[in-house]
Image: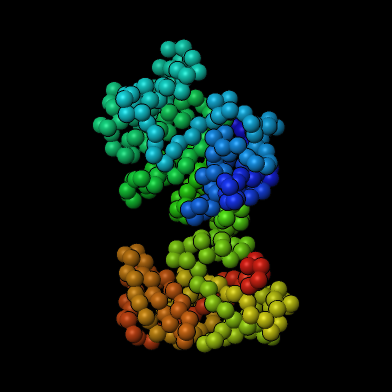
Length: 362
């Protein structure tokens, strides 16, 4: 079990700052997910931790040991790549056994550990096959078995599910989470898929432009985004945003007004007469027959511009003046394009951001 600590970690490629003075502590046995769009620096951060890249500034610690300049082979870590990187000329047994052979372990120990890892990943019946005889999901299991067979201090996974079809990704997410709990190994997982992040992570570190924008439990990051980027990146459909002027406890958008609760008014005290950025999630807007009675609701009249039937859910695009609000309703909800619709916004679920700093006011 290992605590991984990043201190002021920085990596540049020419003029591009891929990782920008990042600080993060990953707890012993924790499943940490680095989440962000392509090019945000998450894979580079992973490569710095494993030792495949050398930082320009900062330090990497495993517990109290400074491993910043330690070669990957001496860090006792394992990494699963997006491409799986299983060797095509080796049978499954030899692929899994390879890291142990490199470490010159005895044949008895190799057999015992390969048996243990293959049983854990449920591929013990595939040990005599070659990779080209396996499905994508089976190759992924081989890559994970090879990674855990040495019982690493830290397990690192770089978008390992991205090459799988949608159904297999769902199944493998559950398998990976169960496996990590059984092993108790400190795990760092990179993905751009927020569904993966929310379902797998003990904590999520959201990255953008080489920086950690917010670190927290998935529910916390979803319900209390600390800035505009996190609010817009987390959630599907994404959060609705619109500009409004705050005045005397009311948010005045171009086409409607929202009366705030006292605690919200208090937090916006310094914004009197100023324009702020307002956000609300699609599931916090309701048509009349679905509006909860206990909530503080503000009603708005709009027109349905577009309908997305997704099976279990239906997504409505409701135009209110020049603003379009996305509303998430149950799949059975019937809606007609062009018809009028009165919608209710849950005022308590509003998010307000400072337009200059993009930080959350609440």
